[in-house]
Amino acid sequence: MELCRATLSRAPFLPAAPPSLPVRDFRKRRVVCLSSGKSESTESPKDTQMVVSVTGATGFIGRRLVQKLLADKHKVRVLTRSITKARFVFPVENFPEIIIAEEEEWKKCIEGSNAVVNLAGMPISTRWSPEIKKEIMQSRINVTSKVVDLINHTNAEVRPSVLAQVKLKSLMRLVLQEMTTYQRFSWIHLDDLVNLICQSLTNPSYKGVINGTAPNPVRLSEMCDQLGQVIGRPSWLPVPDFAIKAVLGEGASIVLEGQRVLPAKAKELGFSYKYPYVKDALKAIVREL
Image (tube, rainbow, N blue to C red):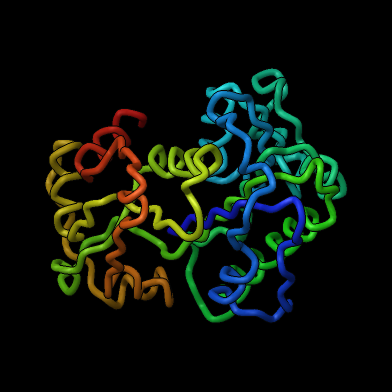
């Protein structure tokens, strides 16, 4: 998972990209680091109340991010394409301070926001095929294009100073099979990812692409052994390759081949992980069940 944090200037617009641009190039062009017109200010965002507009707020990461922002006394504007779902996830009796805006109201919400967090896109927890991968990619391009376009057409005096874009790189499943016993893969607890996003909104040192992973990748067999210890049950039996491919489609490559990504930049920036080791993360997850 990658977090791309851009400091937005009051003067130049974010560069436009052609609609057909691939995701990897789109990320480089759309989410860029520019000099901020507010950089001369000595006031730290940590000491002030922020207004944060969030797309994808009703998703797995978005829900926890909204809760964290509210707990930290910031104001949240939920930019949604489904007002019904947003009101279900954030009922007014429990979240009276949240502003929920449909697409035609996004521009008004972005105006005056200190930051925008873009989490929207089609869920990746599904069976992958060439068509599904194309839909996943296009869904993220479409929303990001809209958000950037709205920022570009916002008056400089009320333009957000930060755009944080979260890019999901892989699908992680807790399965165990013989061929990947020694393959390491990266992971991160939800709370640490949300804290990393919040740090990118308040700390000007967080710029460019930051890998949102824990500092200690694990083997799949280790993950399952640790989970077995946490829940007091034996580790799962091996699952054959063909069964994983049948369930995950092309997404099975993530499980079968592994993906070892290290958070070098996050560590360099001094980010403090609440759950640096998988056993502690699993214990926390089980406590919430």
